[in-house]
Every structure is written in structure tokens, then in C-alpha cells.
Image 1 (cartoon, one colour):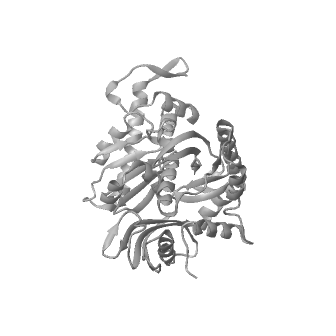
Image 2: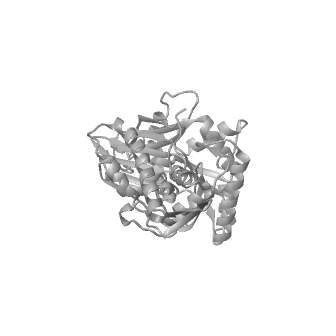
Image 3: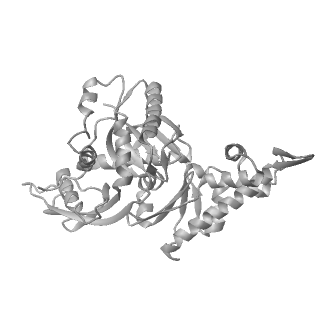
Length: 420
């Protein structure tokens, strides 16, 4: 049976959908598309019907392209107001052969999930980071290893119920079930970094449209997430204000001609305005000077956020996000931040744009989970898969008299089994 999954990344400016087939530990992209989002402001859904309509458009486009039925998605949400906890849980190995099974890991995760948190917080993800069994330890799940007990260090990610619950409602209100939920900061890292980076230390900067997310990883944990209220929109706004043109036209010029390579001094005229009998011509060089200054300002804000890490945390910085799709962006960032910087774009065919990183990374997040729990049923029903699979898949997260609370519990139960 094919293992095909749909990953939905809902952002404040765009909604992205990537459908990929898992082939061993790699993902073959079958479909990828995005469209402007409506009804979301600063990561908070303010118009659920508008978001449902956007999701429906993307799903319909994907289903028509694939000639398939999409029944569920992996859900990526913004990191706004998320909180990070380093917790641990343990379990006794009660089987007669004392071999560690996935149920033992689930039991340990269940105990780890009982950490104290605020009443307004909802648990988003429980991510195993390190396993301890007998005298040994491992980053990989020690399935079938012999031990009398197992302890798991876990990265727990929460967000506010005010943020999370509307995302759950709009997705399920669109007729889709949800396999797993994660924040974009973590799922993006699963595409960008290998395990060595996540343990030795790395910084990820996701430049969005209205804001940028800064994430710091070390010892396998996502240790620090913060946002700055500047993004690609501010670069377009800078051009619009200086040239006295509409923001939409400035955005078009940025996408078509934008570059931070000011040393080229290209004098091709890309825009002219009339002021009485005077004509003002604006060149590619003028545009690159504005964008260079705008990226400098943005990176200075990022530098302020990174100061909390201390001078000894001089890790490489990787930049992703549609707001950074400007030639020479990484060079300006390197000059401002004073450390190694590179822009990252996926190499998979069909998603070679920086705004698809989180959606693609979410599928790799599922790859990791499947190593522990085994494969879950495909979220895309292809023509050669029987309809019974679709029927088995429906209703995964739909129950209970309190709909939102019930759905959240079902989601968490997919990777946490709490003891009675």
C-alpha cells in the first residue's frame, strides 16, 4: 500500500499544501501549491469561514491534480505564543522477555505528558529526544532492546487554546481529519537539519510575510523560539513608500527584479513617475539599494533576538521562508549577524521554494514517528487503493460532546497513552 500524506501549513499570509509519498526515509513530492490566506492575523484565526474556503480551494486543486481523495492532513501551525518544556517519563518493561516495544515508549510518553502547565495551554507535540534503557542511551527508539525499564527525555510543545482550537476547527470543518499537529519552527527543522545539527547547535530564521520566527536548537531540543514583527512585507512597504507606489506594485517589482547585490549597479529602468513636467526614473540599482537597507534592518532585529543566546553560541544560521526569496539576502544577513549564514531551499522536485520548507518537513516529522509506532494509513486515497481504507480512516478525530476538547484529546492520544 502506498504511503501518501498531505501536509497543510496554515500561515498568516499564505496556506501551503504538499502531498508526498514516503519512500523509505525519503519523500517524493506528488503535489505542491499555495495561495494567499484570509481571515488570519498575527497567527490568530479571526474568520474561520474564510480560512475554510481557502483550505477547500487547495484541497480541490490537489484532488483534481492527483485524481485522488484527500481524507486527512498533517497540520502545521504558527509558533505564535508557543511554549517549550523539557520533560521526561519512564516505564517498567513488564513483558516476560523484557524487550522494549512501542507500547512501553507510549507509556513513558504518557507519564511525561503530565507536567504542570497553565490552564489556557494546549499540548501540541510530544517529541522524544533521548532514550535511556539499562546502562545505555540512544537518540533512536530502542525497539526490541532488552531492559527492565526505559526513560525518555521529551520536548513538549504547547500553545494557547485560543490559538490552537480554531485551527483544529477549520481543518475538520473542511471535512478533513488530522493525523498530527506541530509548529512550523520544529517541522521546518526536520527538513533543514540532520540530527547532528540539532544536537550540536543550530539557528533557524523563517522570514515570513509579516513576521519572522527565530528558533534555536541544541542537544536535540528546540530550546528557544521567538518572533520579530518584520518580514517580507516590510521590504515591499519600504519600496512603496520611497517610490510612492501601491504596495502591490512594489511587491511585483520585488519579486521580478529584487536583488541585494548593490555592487552590480544595474541601471535598467523598471519604474517611472511624473511630477508635473519632471520624470523620475527608478532603476534596478535603486531597488537593490532599498532592499539591501531593508534586509539590514530586518537582520538587526533578528540580531537583537539572538543576543539572549550569549556570545558563545556562534552557530550557523539558516534562513528559510518566502520573505527571503531575494538574491543576495544571505550575504547581507552574514554581514549584519557576523556569523555563517546560508539560505535553504528544498531540493525535492516541485517544492524548490523557501516557503515550502515547513510543509515538507512535517512529512519527515511523520517519518520519525512511524519509526516508533509503525505506518499510519495514507491520508490520500489514490485510485488503486480500496475505498475501505478511506472508511477506516474517517472519524479519527471526531467524537465526544465537547467537540474541540474531544478532538484535541484524540490527537494527543495518537502519540500519548496515559496510564489509568
